[in-house]
Image (tube, rainbow, N blue to C red):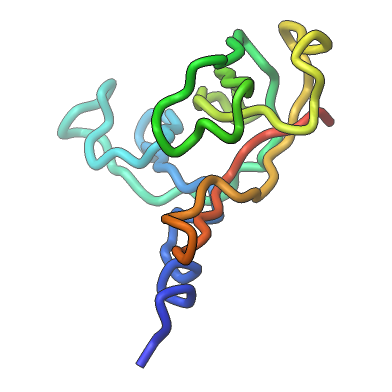
Length: 132
């Protein structure tokens, strides 16, 4: 029998950026798509796992009133990051003073704790970004 933490770690998209690429037009998507919006039925989609994890901040906001489950992390920064490969992603920015964040700042992906399910619950990890 596989433990719950092992099952969590084995989930394909949990600790890697996994998208898709249209072999017809070369467009890269994150998250994965089953049909290329540009080519439609003519496109041939395949998994794309070659994301470097490097990117630049396009825009950001500081969250002072978070939803339930994230109160202990406030204030925290959410940013739209444009990956080196092209797609954009919404992610938390960690280990950076919010007043020091600026457009174009180079960042890279890290794996960090996202939240914990109750006092005796499972700790969920996921990707976030930090200053390069």
